[in-house]
Image 1 (cartoon, rainbow, N blue to C red):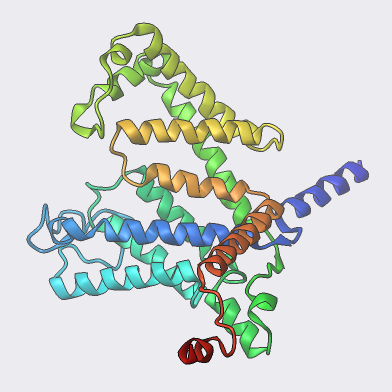
Image 2: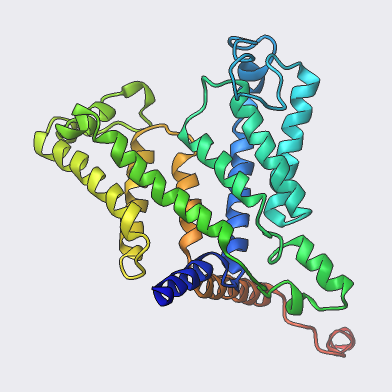
Length: 328
């Protein structure tokens, strides 16, 4: 009895705390930072319409329990611009890894505040971004591929190659939380969908394809009018999401189910306006990238960029060649 419990405890500690290279965490931080930069910039066209004093339904959400934030509703122009600028600067700082922990906290507070300031305009993609920002606050995400890492390396007398392009080991417990978020999200989606008669009857995708006011591109009629294709897409979506929620933990099956998951989200994003949901899911997928693979990918990309820069540089002028041509 004691031995199985000891093995279980050892497996638990390995899962959450066994050190691994920080390359996956660094890559996740950079991609997530770019995602939040895009999300923040997307607020510009409707910033005052959705959150300003003269916007839609000003002040109608201030009494909702739990909907607290830094953006008042309604918000005056100066305070709104200040908070927007703070979120944008923090998202850029998070991307490059400058004062990373503080930047992650500001990003989480900023995304949550704008989301709560007007609850009519959010979607599940916004909620996922908010959750990922929350996890990242607790991670040492500036430990590698960051300006913070570069500053520490230079202050210690190290070189760029010796400090910036190294990936110190760290406990992966934050990445594990993100992985669990992905798995539970898919399983929860399946559970809620099967409660609906539309999904059990195989017609749910047909309804989604007919919501023309939120279509990005038109859906061919032979798809929406085919009972067989609609049922295949409906039940196929349930099967794929169930597989993603379970088989993503299997190393052999993971590349296959995640590839089909990417294709599914690309199809959804092609047909329906769903904001940043698909991009947020792709960033979440990075949490499952093995550290060894992430390291090879990062260093290979670095080497390719360096090689391209080297090839574009003009060849060095040999000593004395200019003077020889002048005398000639």
